[in-house]
Length: 183
Image 1 (cartoon, rainbow, N blue to C red):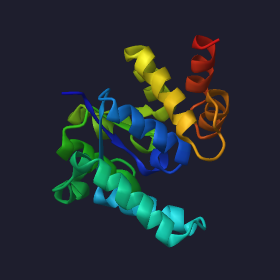
Image 2: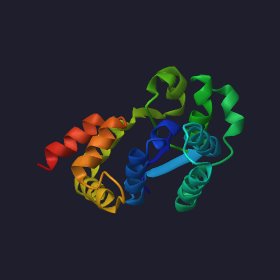
Image 3: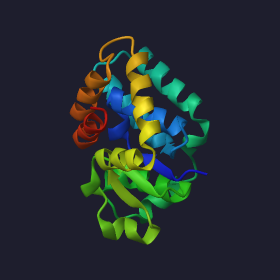
Image 4: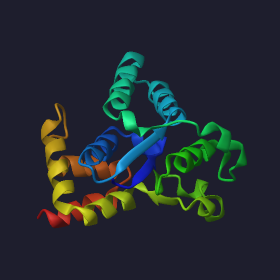
């Protein structure tokens, strides 16, 4: 069984990054996990940023339905005993309850080592996580990125355009490495 990671809301928010992360988990390179709190935070943030509520509900419902094994439950009782940033305690609680090896986030500073080390949970920036997946299975990752670009109904419809979008979404080193490997 592939290793499990909790995807924090901040890495699920950018559309192209979310699509990349979820496509790679469909390939079986890792197992995505999230909590009801993460899903609701994603829903709320997308709506707050002006995306149509019905479209957001459809997106989130489709995401949850496509990955029924991603939902972690029973984590709420752990929240109060955790020492990471208060707004991210639900994320660490889900990682602990879900048996995750890591939390993938942009907010690494919110999870200082003393708060996660007792639970043997690594906190990893999304850019580094994607680079690790690329090292693990370069052919599968590059193939999935090409498929993602071709499947887009709107721009970016090319691998180059998708890599630009991923760089803007917070994965510039990953985008650069894909460019280097696909020259």
